[in-house]
Amino acid sequence: MTPALCLRMITDLAPQLESGEISARELTDACLERIARRNPDLNAFIAVDEDGARAVASRTDDEIAAGRYRGPLHGIPISVKDLIDVKGLPTTAASKIRPKTPAARDAPIVANLRAAGAIVLGKCNLHEFAFGTTGEDSAFGPTRNPHDTSRSPGGSSGGSAVAVATGMSYGSVGTDTGGSIRIPSAACGTVGLKPGFGELPCDGVIPLSRSLDHVGPLARSVVDAWLLYQAMGGQEPRIPPETNPRGALRLGVPRRYFLDHIDPNVRGRFNDALGLLSDAGVTTTDVDVPHASEIASVYLHIVLPEAMTYHSRTLDSRPEEYTPGVRLRLEMGRYVLAEDYLRAQRGREVLRREITAAMTNCAALVLPTLAIPPPPFGIESIAVGGLNDSVRSVTLRLTQAFNLTGHPAISVPCGNTPDDLPCGLQLVGHINQTIELLTVARRVETTIRPV
Image (cartoon, rainbow, N blue to C red; front, top):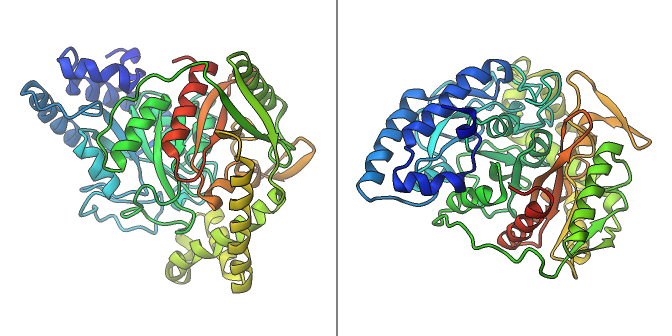
């Protein structure tokens, strides 16, 4: 199969699958051939179920031929982050800690995708237990950015983003606790959606921080992500109608804190995108989040103790089996006082109210997804915009707030740096209005990156 087939959109393929012009077996073979060729260098997959995927693809072709077409995901090969249960495959979380026993059942989001007709190819690599933003710490070795293999693909859902970006799967399922869908999407040039908190079930997903964890799709376009999101929630996936490309639309730009420390090339692509949106009739207005400078502290005082709680037994009995960086962060959770945790929970409520207020007269907020281009492997700190900070802090800086507040957020590609490294534009929607956010994101994507 040609690379062009691997890199097409779900929305383009669905009518051809329904008509029989192409088959699910063709798409599955194309992805498996792509995995065989690219995965040795990129390490996006931990496990590939070739026989299982081909068997499902053959049954799918029979169903479609018999007139039992289920919709636009029927026959589409996808991948799943190896933090999520897929029946018959171990859930490793990219760690030596996890047992190698195959999962007895699919997580509900996986079961819902199968019910919509999606074909699961295998499990994707990640930063161990989803507790990192670079993809470096994995028992299976690091995932590498396809645009420059010396650089991070972002994390923790780096394997999922690489799989989608390179045509190893047409979509993927990731998790996002501080940016783990949006960060790798920005670093690899894909679309990544974090729905609102609690919209999609996290059952069958190894937790990192139960009050911050989200699951969501990664795809090549907003509409493809939309279809996966609908199916993951148990809805019938439907391709939405076209939106007015020049209707009234106002976006809020949170400049203070969020745009204070940005790589010049990332800032350039962001400003280019705002210019294109302005030319298309979109109005932008500056907005403020008064306590934005407290975001990182509030986040750390919640994520660290919640993560440690899940891992407390194995931290005591098998600490040497964790990768050093993940073990250090988990151990830090032991030293967060209960009063600090409770204070942070009050802080997140303040931030939720302030971000909601900032959006009062706007359809969404708009800001970069990642403050820097994907960083090289092996560096611990980085200077950007007059700030020298850890890579982890810099990469989380623009995304973690919306895990605290539960607002839906999506990253859309918005061009490349002069070194041909992707940049992402982040849109943040109103609470409980993920569909409205997707509608805005579709218009923005069409304006800044026609697909």
